[in-house]
Length: 109
Image 1 (cartoon, rainbow, N blue to C red):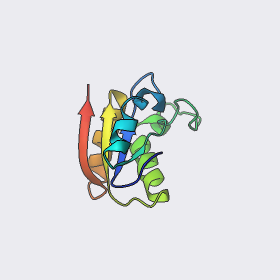
Image 2: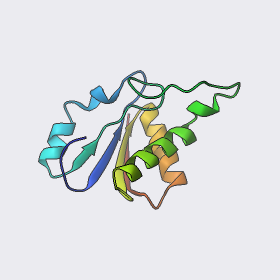
Image 3: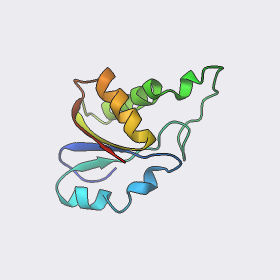
Image 4: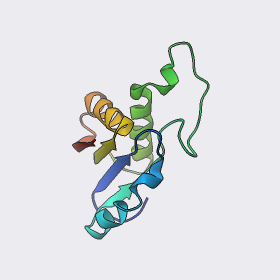
């Protein structure tokens, strides 16, 4: 997390981690945004809960809930979200399930 101003949540793809945003995040901070780049559940240094037969702990809905919880813990009720690859699918689920929290969304391919 870096910067101040409107919050932007950047969600990485597969098989990356938050490090994928290392060249983009400084530019967003310089433009006046607070940038948050977590690792998605199961990636990098994030929690890796036991899975089940349907892999529900790793579904996009659970990953979206993780991100809303993180942003709430940081004091952000509303934020922009950018997702790449798997992060794009998590961002889409986040916008569907938590539309009041998402001020804007962008999926990067």
